[in-house]
Image (cartoon, rainbow, N blue to C red; front, side, top):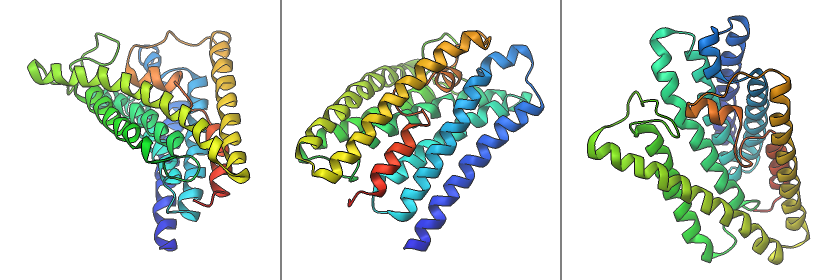
Length: 276
């Protein structure tokens, strides 16, 4: 089992790092035209993306390998992989025949964000704080499915008038649009509930688990600081006008804790000492 976990965990790591390195490396050697560069986000966004993927993929692989029974490692690996595949859309922008696919891949960033709700909800043992939190987990799963599928197949991309290249029209498109909106609201609600669950877990936790939870709080503080620093640095670095596609919006200015590189090492430190 250990050998199987090793190969699965580090295979995900290889794919994540290779996809990100390909996208950013090719874009560095062959800069996009100005019209397309705005869709790829800023250079600062690319650096954040590279650090994020490397951190989440590496810590996720270590946890999944050493503690394959704890889902935290697999969730972190999945988050890094989803973000890496989304970043591969930048690489696809370079080729006219794959630009439609590039724009469509924006939905995968929503998957990465949604997985982090489960990271917070299950941290650090890989289990819910109690059975009472099962409805929150089910709601988060339903919200994630609706949010991802809605963004993948709604007629228009989230928050813009840009048409979805594979979006459905008619009644089916309307259903996916509703799923997109309702799923997003539920993700916010369940994300807040997951944060509240940390307080309940902390009250019942022993000394070691409390230390792990404090690491997660420190990670959150670092994430907020990193986001603020990125926002303040973008005007100084002459960031291009913010694009309207979901892919670039989420890659350049990540919401919540899911995408900052500091979160992964702190979560990993806690889980590596977890008994769960």
